[in-house]
Amino acid sequence: MRPDFSAILEEIKQQVATNSADLHLRVCQLLKEKVYHYDWVGFYLLKDGLLELGEYAGKPTDHTQIAIGKGVCGQVAEKKETIIVQDVSQEANYIACSLDVQSEIVVPILRNGEFIAELDIDSHSPAPFTQEDQDFLEQVCALLEASF
Image (cartoon, rainbow, N blue to C red; front, side):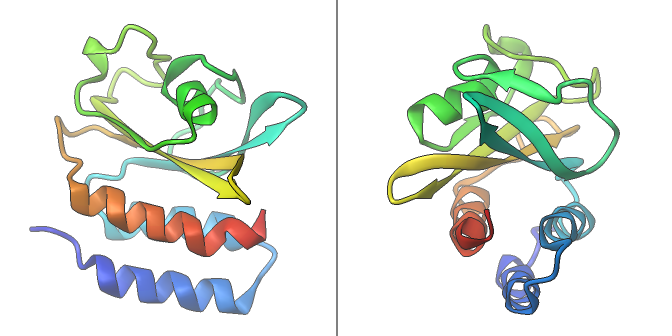
């Protein structure tokens, strides 16, 4: 059963409107809770030329800093485009966060065309991401852009 992305987007709009200090964490938790195939949800922020792990929901990761161009996250920062990897075992430049991860989607957050952060989602399901996921997550990132 596909999640109701429009209802989740409305919940996120309400969270953004409250502008709480823990907005990013709340969004991570909401996405992880509401979408069955989102097993790890987190933000990486651009700081001093590196991606630094921000708020996230899911198991802890050792990847608290990622170089631009390295792994899927680093490639998204470099290209400023969403990347979907339906089978991480086929990705040559993949940085494994967990043996359970089978697929990943990473969506850039841009301000005035410049990369400032990204939303990274890992899934334990094989090839779960659709164009609907991408469209939804790009809307989420657009809503959050001003909060970074």
